[in-house]
Length: 124
Image 1 (cartoon, rainbow, N blue to C red):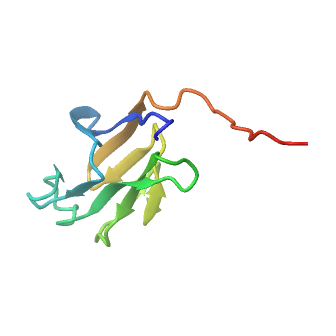
Image 2 (image 1 turned 90 degrees about the vertical axis):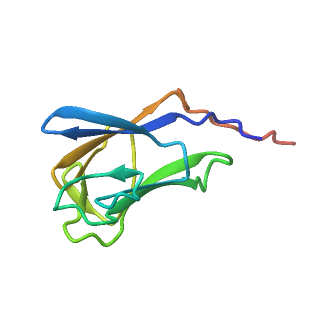
């Protein structure tokens, strides 16, 4: 039983401060790269054929909740989040991803609106 609602996750692709397209992150994996078989194709010579991916992994802490990770797949020019080069990174809303000349903004809507602490019943 899933008690925690999943947020609506997306990557907003920007080029030169102009929004190009929004990609919903509904599946378990979104590949990013220059090749046409990627779900998110970036036409940029600084982008590797298969550059990076976003995956949704089961949270080790919350049953039924998936956490988004950005993984660089050994690209030539690297992947940055908020200005720092990454190999694997747990995404949070507002993160700015740069691959080649493209900037992507990670967004979430809905989901957990508050922190819930569950305290088990204690028998005396």
